[in-house]
Length: 154
Image (cartoon, rainbow, N blue to C red; front, side, top):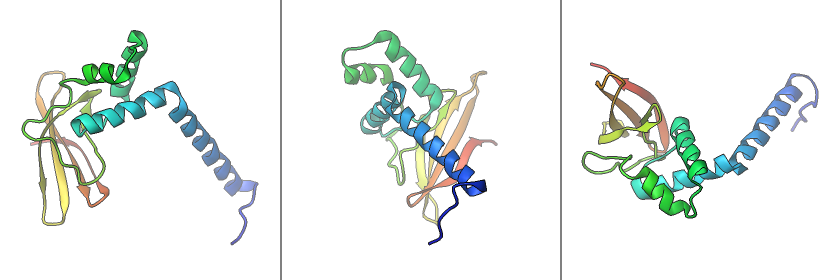
């Protein structure tokens, strides 16, 4: 195997990716990163929901820092109570847990269905600033997310 030169374009790219990797590891080890990881673990086990929405995480982390609770689990259960709603049953995820959010707010899960091509679709409902209903959908085929994420218009 040929050695990648330390200089020139390949060297610059390698250095850039190394810096990004170090920054990502530092973020994961930071108090905010540790909080986000613990929050996601909790929401996935308690609600079959993800919490990987930056606005949602930022708001809860801000509250967490202000309130400085003694017990994270009790606090996070209280802080997220009633936020991840399902109209009927919660989703049964084919791939990764992938809840829909709008402006940092979890949307309500409505339904899931599969098509003839082995893709599973997850439909969520929310309300915009004018209190008008809108829908978002996620889709997964096997273990891969289908690039389908947006509002459903009529």
